Length: 327
Image 1 (tube, rainbow, N blue to C red):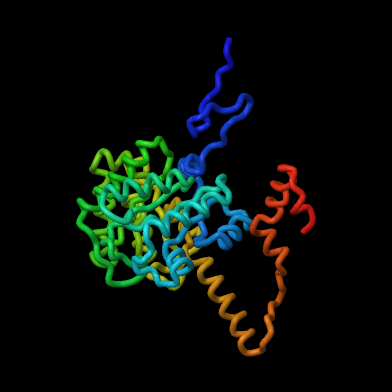
Image 2 (image 1 turned 90 degrees about the vertical axis):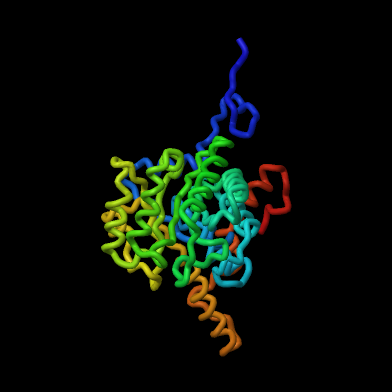
C-alpha cells in the first residue's frame, strides 16, 4: 500500500514523519478561543523593535501604522503610508518568528473593495495572523487625533466583506478585526451602533472575528462597549482595547482591561516612546559632551545577539560554511 501524506500548506505533500506546525493565524484564533486569556500585544514598527519584543517573551505582536509611518517615512500618521509600505513591513516582521502571531494595522485597506481584497491576501500570505480594517476616509489620520472623517456605513461594510472574501478564497485563518473611528466625530452611541450593525449582516457576523472601538474616552465607555458588543454568548465578538498612554483613552493596565471584558490589548506606542526618549537623551548627551554615554553600554555583539546573530551562526554551520565560525 502506498504511503499517504498530507499537504503542508504550500501545495506540496508533507514529508513522511514530518508534521506542519499550526500557522500564526491559527494560533491567534486558538488564543481568542480561550476566554480566560487576554492577549497582550506590544506595538512594534521595525525589525529591531520586533526582535526586542520577541526576546522579551511576548506571545503576540502588533505592527503599528503610526510607528511604520514614522520609521519608514519620517512622517506623522497622516495617511501617507501606502499599501507597499505597510505590507512590506508586515511581511518582514511576521517572518522574524513565524510562530508568534502578528496583528497588523491595515488602515482602510488602501482603496475600494478590490484593493482591500488584494491587501488581505497579501497580509495573509505574508504570515500575518490578524489585521484590522477601519471606517475612516482614505485621507485618514491616527485614531488618537482630532478631526477624523468617516465613510458611510455601506462603504465600510464593503471593505470588510472584501477582506472576508479574500481570506476565505485562500483558505486562511487570518483574524479580521473591524475597527470604527466613529467615537470621535459621532459619539459613543454611534460608534457602538456601527459595530453592532455588523452582527445584523449574516456574512459579516460570521466573517468578522473581533471588534475595535477606537478612541474610547472614559473607563465607563470602555466597560459599556464590552457589555454591549463583547458578549460572545449573545452574538458579540472579542473586544480589542487600544491603550495609548496620554492619548484620548484613560490609561489602564492589562488586568483592569481584562476585568472589563477586553480580550485583546494593544500598546502601539510602547516602543515608539521607548525609542524616542532613549535616543533623544543619548543624542543630547553626545551633542553636549562629545561622548556617547550610556548607563550600561550594550556593545555590538550583545545588540546583534538580539537580532539573530546566534541563529545566523547556526545556519552557516549546518550548511557546511565556516565564515561565521568565529565572531
